[in-house]
Amino acid sequence: MPPSVPSIKPGRRRRIERELRALHAMQSHLNTRDIVLSVIAIPALALLCFLVGAKLHLAFGHWWVSVLAALACGGAIWLVGRHWFNLALLIVMALLVIVFEDIPDLWPDSGKPDRKTARRLKLEQAIARREALLQSMKAP
Image 1 (tube, one colour):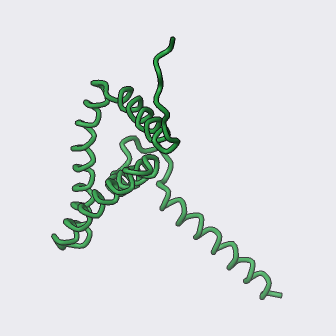
Image 2 (cartoon, rainbow, N blue to C red):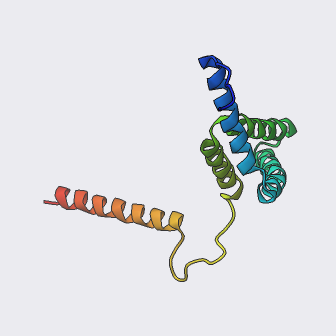
Image 3 (tube, rainbow, N blue to C red):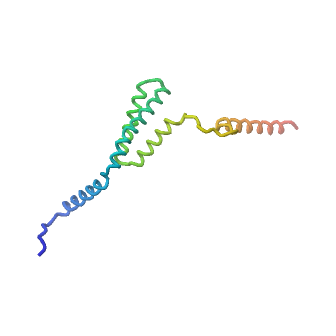
């Protein structure tokens, strides 16, 4: 004869099932690799926030701008990362772009002008062409 199972209310059953799913999720995520990666990632994100703050300090010249920027970056990553991990990754990528946007190219293209120079030359050519067209229209 099977052991008697006490009757469980539906609300309690859902709670137990939810707790069991959470426990299974915790069981699969507690391996050493994940712990080591989180120990490495937390100081790296803190360093990234401070680098953004230092860059803003160089841009604006006020120490309070760098402190507020570092705190705002860290707070945004923490708040968003609690619920939407992918959005937190986008914020981290944007911070990396801010930090490394002024670094010159390590391997410049040989013979090609940089993008700003090429754009300026193209604009000058377009202006010269339009001016020549206007001059040719006025001549007869």
